[in-house]
Amino acid sequence: MKIINDIIVVGGGTAGLISALMLKTKFPQKNIKIIESSNVGIVGVGESSTEHWGKFCKYVGIPHLSVILKSNATFKLGVYFENWSKNDFIHTIGYPFSQVSDDYYKVYGHLIANNSLPMELLSYSIPKNKLSMSYFNDIHNSPTNQYHFDTFALNELLHEECNKRGINIVIDDIECVTLNDKTDEILSILSKKSEYFADFFIDCSGFSRILLGDVYNIKWVSYSQYLPVNSAIAFATKEMEEYNMYTKSTARKSGWSWMIPTQTRTGNGYVYCDNFTSKDEAHQEMEEAYGQSLEIVKEFKFDPGRLEKAWHKNCYAVGLSQSFVEPLEATSIGSVIQQMFCFMNFLPSYDIKTCNEKVNLIFENIVDYIRAHYLVKKEDTPFWKEVKYNLKLTDNLENYLEMWKNRLPSVTDVSCNWAMFSAVNYIQILYGLGWFDVEKIKYEYENSGKDDSIDPFLKKYDDESFWLGHKEIIKLLKNGCLG
Image (cartoon, rainbow, N blue to C red):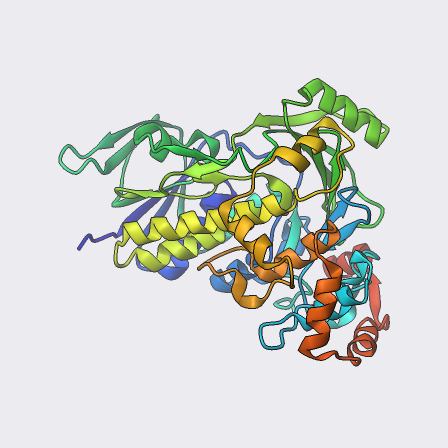
């Protein structure tokens, strides 16, 4: 059995720092070292997480609200979809809407059966950007497990946590990699300053894919036939007067734009398909939409997909080194966390085959869900017309949609270890896009046991007492008045 005492993480971005912290928590006796490039490629115009961030914080012991205090973060409760459908909608999952009765999401069934507007499938406080004071009695508590981050400040926070835990961070630039002549495993990494030896290597080098890409030439599996965008520009605007409680995704002519509020500025970007618009045209479209001159601070092209296998020999790829979809549901940080939980489960047994199979399923779970967002009825531009009529469905999504022709998604419909999305995540998206047959859902709901107590319960749940605005809450937290 292979003995692993020394692990090197290549890359000091978000993925590398999270991976190192999780490894040190799981295996405190192992030596964890990060080799960080002198030129870390941080976009720096805002980043957001999914609820898996809360799971990470709990696992490694970072107080929830420290991200508010130390990384200029704001609270996030979902994603607001503007102009994707006839009515705007928000994807947010939480109590009491996601309650289950015998695997059936009865509250959602009740609301949809009664032809509620998509915005009625969530707490009214979210679009009003309000938070209940009851959450802030303890810095370890939080109204949400998701946040919008200032990416530079988050990087500093994670560095600080690594230093606290004895994780050695070396600033150096890798020049080449040496392999063991007999096993073809990585023996050491050579850089400008030194040679670094380890028993195992984690590739968190981003799009560079220094180890599994350059050294081992692991095949890239493209999913471009299912996902329609391949380019992005990013830019910053001034701080919002009131912080949104959500990431805003607005459908544009050839894709969609994002808006992420942080405490110092707002991060924005446009993700588009270069078959339908150019970078200059996308830039102009954004300036017209925002009514101001915008400075593009980052641009990149991508092929949505994953490595054929994340684990090869004594190397495991995480984050952008392993896969990239698109930032529509902020899956980047969450997928790193889930992928590392998967890896740490199989590292003691060194079960490479099963781990790779599970990681590929994690990624396919993400692709299925992101693809579902493009089940649009709109066809007002050539891009959206192409999406509506010609974009392929994944096999999994095709099977899901066949099941959901006559009913709501139920708990057991989507099953995947370490998955980011379950059946409940599809409900608000598909209803917001006008995909469900409401009459059939009404029939299902009435036959499952109609519940007239739901409306009064939801009204009581949304009691406005002791709620404050998002920015005011953060101000009180930073001034030490809460927590």
